[in-house]
Amino acid sequence: MEKSFDLKNLTERLKAKGLDIAEDAAMLLINETFAWTEESLAMHPNPYVKFALPVVQTIKPLIVAEADKIDGKIG
Image (cartoon, rainbow, N blue to C red; front, side, top):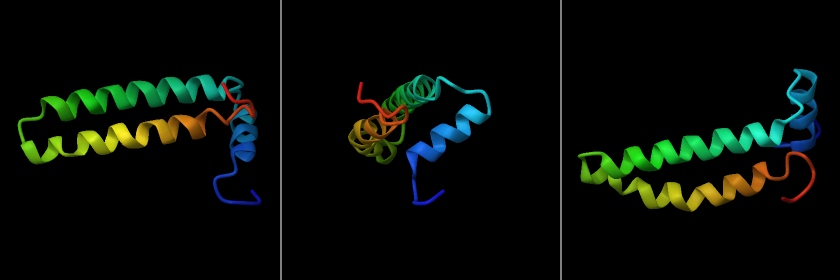
């Protein structure tokens, strides 16, 4: 790896392990994990834990945007 968070390197590593659909799998994992996290935070009885919900909702698009670059194409 030549630079930190090198998406091309990650793609090649995943392909070497047989995961040619790296971006699709990453998007599925990200979306389901965030949906579960948001639902859990919203229903948590501790009001202080609920403060994390806007933070999670703010960082999700940033993570999705980075995962969208895995295959080298936007979209």
